[in-house]
Length: 246
Length: 296
Image (cartoon, rainbow over all chains, first blue to last red; front, side, top):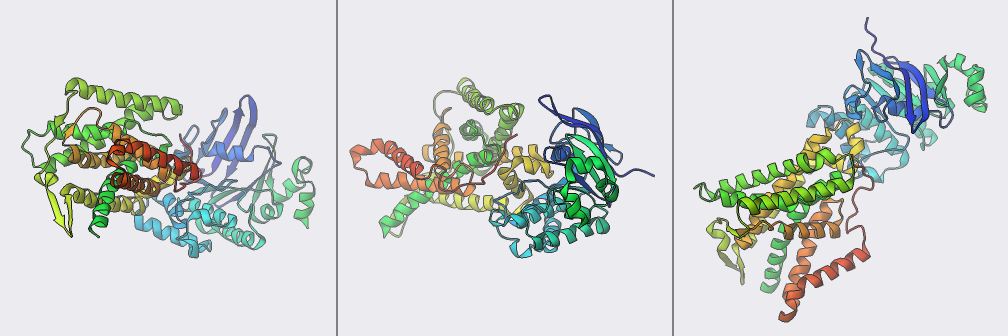
């Protein structure tokens, strides 16, 4: 049986001699939700940047199924079925909402009509159909986040890497987003990696957790084992663990 | 009434040509954030193609189509020769290579053709005048207006309704993000250069229609006009380029009509003074383009 998972093997990244990631290995299986957590500056976003080809690796490999993605450009990684969202939303501000989503579908070889239909379906799913023809620049921050996730999904990815997807959203928006994200792996077999500081969100959504501190893996595994890991409590969770228990 | 009509025809014909010139420059600038200083030479290439094919006996429209095609090829060549090898390095390097490519093309024309003006064949209609509603105007003014309307409509359709147009607008807003989504960057950039060449080719036909000849430095004035129009309109906005073109034509035409005869030779000084005033009022240009944008 072939391994379809997305894996990083001993990945290290350096910035001017500073080791931002040091030998990090993780894997996400299709249909799984993996939470990537850790204190600020622990290397979470850098790991996503490394997977998506935005920063070069000092060491290690990135594999997706049988394919070795090490050294691939962001575009090549995208075409291999790995999509992402950003901590700070990056929409095409002078395109309409539907064009933003459509652009991703078009770039992945869908026809004009198929792309528009796909974009419309995604916007409906995310409750944005009424804003489809508005310019992206005029949206609220929460709506922009949802457009960004819709756009990432329009590329039909096998894996979606979300960097703080609920940041800037109110409670109702977060709850709506959570229910969509929960369903995605089940309905489409999508593998999700989620970075977030909101432990309630992480504990509700994720099947497994991977914890980074100072660029290294300090714990990985099921939610309960990670939550009770003394290293994690010391490095990151602290009162968050209590909140999550509550 | 006839004065107003005369004035409008002058503004629209000059503005149409200016708007097409500006669009050709801004479409590349929008994506790469770099001014292609070899843009004027694309106009020259189309002009010399007309001159070189003038003895072929081909119908004028076929010669014009070949000339526009050559300008498109020269546009794509600009990307391959001057931009692509140094694009990721520095803005200065690209500016210098685009100047170098411009000088190379101009000197090639000087060396292999002639420094003297060469006549370009024009159909009869370009030298005819038309009289209607009390207005007498050269037919080429009406041709320019019609061409500009068709080209602007075509351009708008291309940018709004086609896969390439959406990809180009996405790349113009955030090039890095567009690449990350899987948009083929090199294809988008080459297409922008090809469209720039297409517009330069069409502008060349309209411009040469006014002067009837081609010289190696023919592209300088259109380049300058395009540059000023885009600066007024907003360097990052396609609509701004069109607006800037028409506004510049409006200023030029108004000055033509109002300045006393002995001041007319200083028209450009008046135009540039107005440009400075506009830029003091709106330093970003009249239409602000997308806020973000990265090159590489």
